[in-house]
Image 1 (spheres, rainbow, N blue to C red):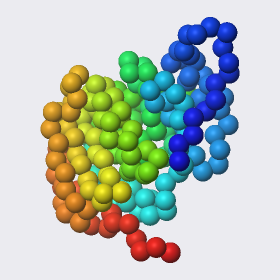
Image 2: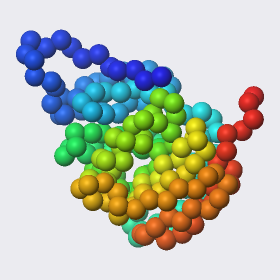
Image 3: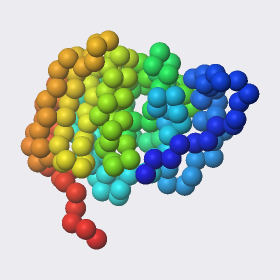
Length: 199
């Protein structure tokens, strides 16, 4: 389920600026169990992930941590990365970022400081994870974008970012190893990424 935050009625027909949307996002009282991002000129709220996604995020972080670029950290959590050129602001599920980017009191972190992002798709976010975010991360120069398609149980890594998008990609079904390119140069074992049996 995706909710669009209502904006105040404006007397002009001009859409709100990206800065206005960021300010609205700062003031937004996000519903419990939701996160908010700016996608295609809208504030979009989507529900937090299912419980087993946490195990998958831990597995990714544990495997990549020994291969991080110097001065970078890997984490997951509700951090907002801003891409002013694309007028987007995302909260990636997993991120590897230069530690300098977090040395601020602002809640708006620099998207260009990212060296890796991973998104775990849900029915609410899948379309944006596979389209809008691919374009934005590539144009911002994020070296590696990992899409964990939780509905199709498939991992796709994209790299070699450019203004036209990512120039290289590789996909593997969950359960296989996927090579994560430079600056990581390691294999990600996707064993354990499958959806568990229903409760």
